[in-house]
Image 1 (cartoon, one colour):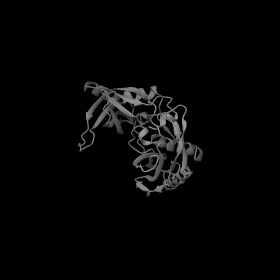
Image 2 (cartoon, helix red, strand yellow; image 1 turned 90 degrees about the vertical axis):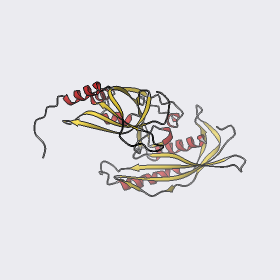
Image 3 (cartoon, one colour; image 1 turned 120 degrees about the vertical axis):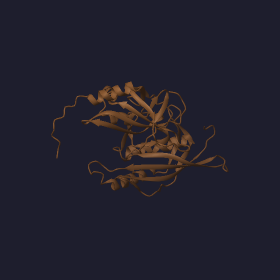
Length: 146
Length: 162
């Protein structure tokens, strides 16, 4: 049976999450996004052309080491918590349908000049609206600074 | 060797656009035929559904010929979860459709070797040729069905070829 009780979303959870992350040493993470329009040439599909990824800032965000145990030869994993307000702003700016579409297009995340690969994305919701996104990241094997 | 790999991929991609124009995917803001080279695309935590992914694995070289003959193994991975209209219950049929499409893409088993590092791409002096596919078993992972087909791709290394 449907829950018919009155709920008036007022964005409180989103503002609290943003404030907590900012107060907790929030940083800026940059999503690596393909340019639009993309490279439709043959050379773009066989690794000859530089992809020209764009950097999309998300702030405030909190970056921390995940609790996963480390194994031999395995790169460390990290967690990135991102304010839903920051994500919503970029989704609106890029005219995307959802936050999932934004993360699906992203090819990685740069934090403090280092590239990380996105392994999974989840969200925490309140009254049906996301207030926090959690990205599970793995360190990229490339040692280049971004 | 890279020219042979590039030629193999672009030949299959162009054939796919003819065999099934509806099999497309959007990758890096471009909608294109549903086939990709794994090592030329960004890391993907999950396989691309309803598309063919080429992964280059083994390499052998026959040095006892006038020109070096390279034999490269290409694993063609494909995964499907069926269609939304059938709630995924047609995933077996969707995989069979991809099996047949792959057979169509691979035939004929050769193509003129091209150098795509030049603009425009230039035809080279030899051909790239490949074996019939060796299909692996269908593998079920929750509501996804996938298969790997192996093809041995051969090409002569030409003089002055990188």
